[in-house]
Length: 291
Image (cartoon, rainbow, N blue to C red; front, side, top):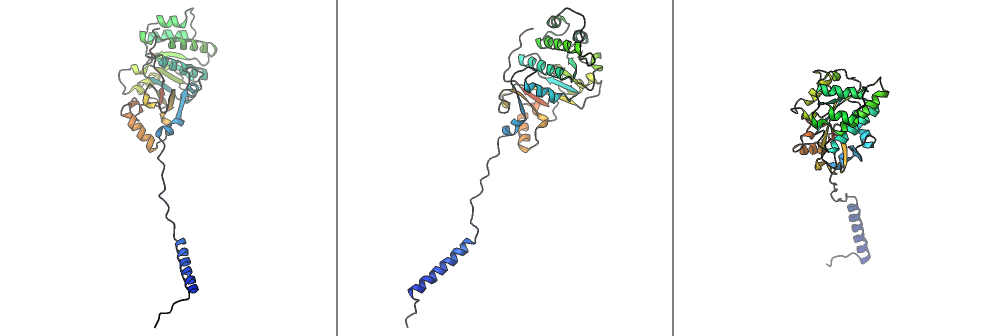
């Protein structure tokens, strides 16, 4: 007996129906998608750049310096670390920030690492003591170490003398470390310390600085400003500028960045005695001219 065969048309209809069934079945299955491509995280410098403030000129009216003065103006104590007279940029930064703080009305005391006798002479001049001597001549003759006789100090004495002449109710004093003038500082205004790196050891510098204002009672509102020319920061601060390390996010990449940098830069190591609160980078370092 011969097998029965479907007519050609019926066979085509049957095969078409089977194909359609398979097509619908396939369409109902999820279509595999290629593995999602995860972009690499941005470099940490891109995370940090928004926290960096550039400075064009080391002058009191530069927007970056004004911003820095505003940032530190809420502190009780602001201390500079680094060689305060070794480079022209160091002197210019200290002078510019000090003058910006004077103009803001927040500053009440400038503390220098000088003898009390020398500080008394400087303070008398700043408070308007009768004299025909220019500030530069006074600085050259005052009994302080030669390395502390700088053009920046002379300029600031002129600024302080002008301020005190018209603000007798809010005088700004000059003091040496642990001198009597420091003891009468107004706790509601900023005390600015120049040259604390000249103390004998890093450990306890902050406490020692605070003790100049409040004998033995360290201030909890103290900003430690460190100057550096570290090229490793050039991707964040390509020129001169500053960054407030206290404001950085505690993200894994930032924490790792600080740990890596801290191997060569202790000033970036949290909880280290010389660790910076605010880091200032100079685009260049020019040897200071003799004064």
